[in-house]
Each structure stands twice: as structure tokens, then as C-alpha cells.
Amino acid sequence: MSVMRADEVVVDVDYGQFYAMRAGGEWASDQVPSSGHEAHLWSDGSFVYVGTTRRYGETKVRVEVLTAPPSEDAPPEWQHVAEVSLDRGGALELHSWDGGTPAATVPVDPGSLRLRVCWRGLVPGRAEGVDDDGNSDEELLFQLWPAEPAPPAVTRWWEERALPAPTDVAPDGRRQTEGLEPVMERWATMTVVATLRHPYPPMPGGGEHAHVVSVLTDPSDDTWWVDGYDVRRTLREVSEEEAQHLLLHARPPDPS
Picture 1 (cartoon, rainbow, N blue to C red):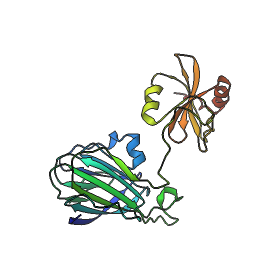
Picture 2: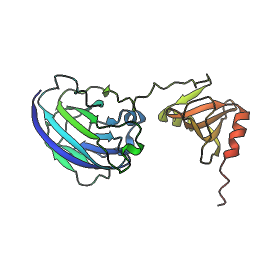
Picture 3: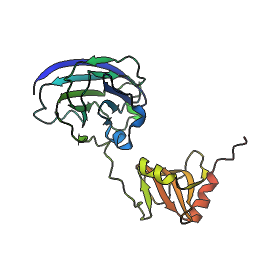
Picture 4: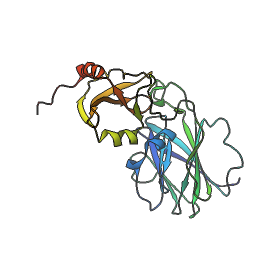
């Protein structure tokens, strides 16, 4: 591996994210799938979403342009490592979360590239990724080299980011649909009975942090379901008795 160019960049993170893109590409921050959010890295081949543990504030990024693939795995101090491919295009622009003028523009090979992003300075248990004074040691490394397109990959998971695979069975064995995209596809065929008030009640069927935000019915078989969050966005079947109990938390009708 030979580093042809190295740039030190500072980006302004908000909502736990910032972006990169090949110059001349299309902005696509509204197209990031749930799998991209879980990996903390996603690209459509031109636009790149980068997730951070730090929710807001300035974050350091080192960008290394390589002549060949790295000869070994990232050093152990890098806690989370993921890769995506970029199609042919212009220079690599790094953007703060609000877009606008790039924070930096890095010349790169115009051909297809592989991008490896590494994170370090991650501390478990910190609310919004910062200490009591609003500080964070999170840093990122971008490494780019010429390569044919390949599927995205997470080659090292930080334990705080690793999630179990989606499942269609709740902890107690009842039916469920897990994951934003399949939930929304199924949700469109259901009838919303009520949305619930905060603090949201626990979701029947188990899950350490599972909670319910709405109650629905499935007109195709007259079953009752709840929509909420467990490990991910989750639709889970409930009994009519459970549903009626949850409806005690329903929001009052909108007077308008």
C-alpha cells in the first residue's frame, strides 16, 4: 500500500451524520436504507452517507488516497470498519451535514474506487456520543483506492453498533415483521386504530427496550398488531385483549 495523498479535514456533524460524494453526482441523503444506517456507511455509487456516534459538532476526518488496496486489516485501534464502492466520477467532496459548499475536495482517480471508512475514539454508553462537557474523541479515516465495484461490507463491528439479524418471531414466539422497509410495506395494508402517548408502553412479546407507538388491525384476517421499536422498527401481533389495554394510552382525537 502506498499513500499518494493525505488530507486532514474537519466536518460539522449533526443528527449523527455527514456526507461525501463524487463531484457532479446527485445528492441522495433521503435515500439511505436502514441497512446503511446500521452499517453507518452507505453509497449509491456516487453519494456517500457516513454515520457517527457523535450526534453533533466538529469531527476530524483523515482522507488517504492509495495507489493499491491496503495490504492488511485496519489497525486494532479502529473500532468499526466498513467499505463501499464508488462508480467512475469526479473528485471526492466531503460535506458537512447541511450540504452546501464542500468542507474539502480531494482529487482521486476518475475510475471506480473502493472506499474504506474507519472509526475510533468511540466510548460505550455516552449519550449522543459526547461527554458531560459536550466533547468527543471520535475520529474517522477514509481510504480510497482503484477497484472494481463490489458489495458493501462491514469488516469490523464496534460492539455497540452490532445488531442481531432480523427475525419474524418475537422473543415469546409470536409473529412479527422486523426492519423499516418490510414494516412500511406491510403497514400500508393495515388500518391504524390509534397512535399512543409518550411515555410509550412496553411492546407485548418481550424485548428489553421494546415499546409501542401505534395499534393497528390487519383487515385481511382481522388480527391485531402493534407498531413500534424493539431491536429495529417492528410490527408485532397482539391479542385483542392486549390491544384494548394499549388503547388506554391512545392520543385524544384532534379537535380540528
